[in-house]
Structure formats: C-alpha cells, structure tokens
Image 1 (cartoon, rainbow, N blue to C red):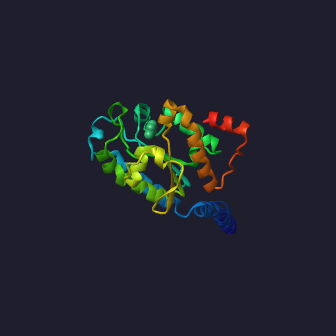
Image 2 (spheres, rainbow, N blue to C red; image 1 turned 135 degrees about the horizontal axis):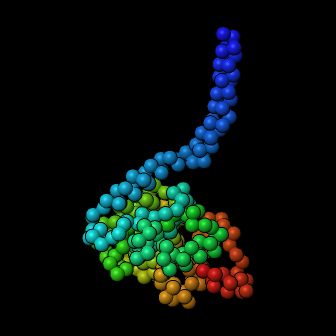
Image 3 (tube, rainbow, N blue to C red; image 1 turned 180 degrees about the horizontal axis):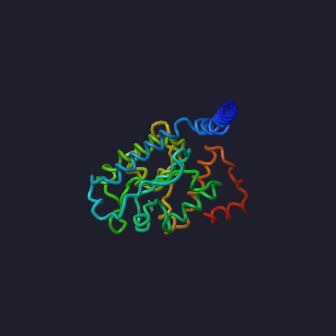
Amino acid sequence: MSKYVEIWDEIRSYLDFAEKSFFWEEKIQVTQKNPDDGDITVRINILKKKIESCTRCSLNLNRKQTVFGAGNVNAELLFIGEAPGEEEDIQGLPFVGRAGKLLTDIITAMGLRRDDVFICNAVKCRPPDNRTPTDEEILLCNPYLKEQIEIIKPKIIVALGAVSVRALFKSKESIFALRGRFLNFNGIKVMPTFHPGFLLRNPTYKKHTWQDIKLVMKEMNLPVPENKEKNKKQEVNSI
Ligand code: URA
C-alpha cells in the first residue's frame, strides 16, 4: 500500500512541477505577448467568414473567391490597395501578382517582411477585367474595410492609390495632390502614395513613393537610410 502512496505522491509532485513550469509559463507567455491576441483572431475570423459569403454587389457573380487580406493581425502598419486582380482572385491572397512583387520589394526596402505588416484591399472581390471599382462597389465594401481597421488598430496606414484614399476619406482628389503628407483617419496616420501597379507602368514615380515610405519609416522609428547620392539611386532602384 505504501508503495502506491509513494507512486501517487510522485505523480502529484510531477503534475505540480509541470503546471508551475511548462504549462503555466506557456500560458503566461501567450497572455503577455498581447492580451487581445485571441480576441483579435476570433474577430478577424468572424469578419473573414462574413466577407466570404458577401453578395452585396455584383462582383460576387464573377469572383473565384473573396480576398480578405493577409499578414500580421497585430501589425503596426497596414497597406490598403485597390481590389484583387486575376492572380489574387485565383490564390485568394492580396498582392501576389506583378504589383505584389513590387509591394514586397517596398516592404523589404523598409527592413520588414510581409509577415510584419497587414495587407488588404479597399474592395474584396476582383472587378471584371481588372477595371477600377465603382463608387458603389467601394461604398458597399466599406464596412468590411472599416471593421478590419477597427480590429487590427494599426498605428499607420499606407493608402496605395486613389481608390484606397477614396475608401477611407470619400475624397476624389488626385493621388498626385494627396501623396507625401500624412492624413488622419480616426486618429490613425494615413500616408497616401502611388499604387504599385501605377509604378510598374510609370517607374519614374518610384522615387516619390520611396520618399513617402521614408516618412512612414521615420514615424515607425525604423532606421531610415541616409540620403547620400550613391545610396539614393540604389534604394530607388531596389523598389
Ligand atoms: N492590386 C491591388 O490593388 N490589390 C491587389 O491585391 C493586387 C493588385
């Protein structure tokens, strides 16, 4: 009998030890990382499901799938594009085509990875033939974008192109006039800049986007490369 008591004592002390060390610490680690983490993931998944079944506008008729967005839901930095293109519609992920490659280069030039930021679009379904989304489509999709922003709570938003700016501010001003200065969206700093698709067609404007991105980096306390002439050429060419 005393042998059983001994074994039982041993098991109990092991369980005690396991709870205090391994399991307990893991619990603390997760909680300390971000107390809202679980909540954010749940809310994001609920929103994603809602968007997946959306039929608010006619874009649902031709889409292969909705493109919710991707990245880190705890990110400080949120990139908002226009709408999915062909490749995004196929893969269900934002910015995975040619424009996406350029956006990845921009993020890399900032010293970050795509997993460090969150990337989404103003409109969640592909417009036929990659046309610009209509005002109505932007408006009908707007509650989804606003809820995404509300859940992620980024410190800074980079609005890629005029559609993205219009979705946030209902402004029809040209991106040429708006870019390069922070705007304010519900207390979040928004940097409007050129859309990567536009930059692919007009590479001479890459240097303007790089200027805008450097302002964002400064705001995020990221190391900003010096403006030496020889570096400048390299950086601009690297995005
Ligand atoms: N252009 C966008 O605006 N979004 C994408 O996801 C791809 C291209």
